[in-house]
Image 1 (cartoon, rainbow, N blue to C red):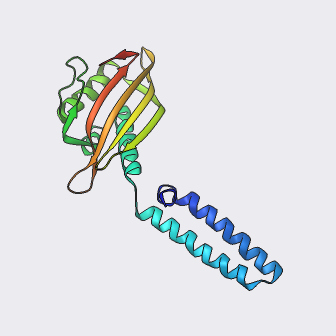
Image 2: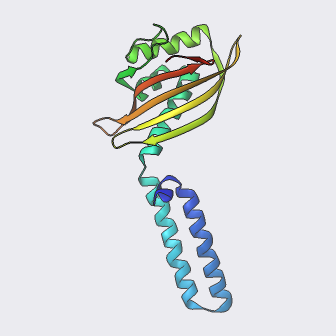
Image 3: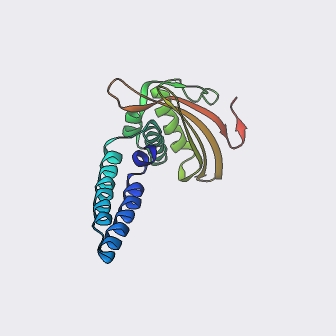
Amino acid sequence: MRFVIEHPLASACILSSISFALIWTGLRDEKLIRIKFGVVIFILAISAMVIGIVFSTTRENASNVVHAFIDAVVDNNIFKIRKLVSPNVIVVDDLEGKLQGNISGVINGVAYLHEQFPPTSNTILRFEVFEREHDAIVEVSMMSRITRIGSVPHRWHFIVTPNADETWQITTIDVVEVAFRSYR
């Protein structure tokens, strides 16, 4: 069921191709039972697509929020960052005083990044989501291209939690490593 919810297009395509094969061979061999099974499987394919579009898992929600946050940071989209990050976010490591442990610290950190080290591109090297009972931990390793510096590797941990409105937001940001320099 998880595959259907997380990959609605793939599951619908697989079921549709099975349905097509059953209907085709049923028509070719004049076997009504195969045609009926093919129609039933086609209805299942449509149902799988609808279920996958309507419902989402914790992994999908956390992944979407963190990907959108990374894109917003690279694009310097402060409005989007405010929507994706919880107002009472916990910043575990403040990069030696550069960030305060709240939303304004995150906004100031993004402003500092674009003022001092404007990124030109970002590549996600590793992206893992670990689901827990009420939230998800997302571990991300990236390589960013920085103006006047070059490529800089960095690793982050995020905790993504739904709020009272069931809107998923980043509640904890943890800088693990920047340019092979550990912040532990």
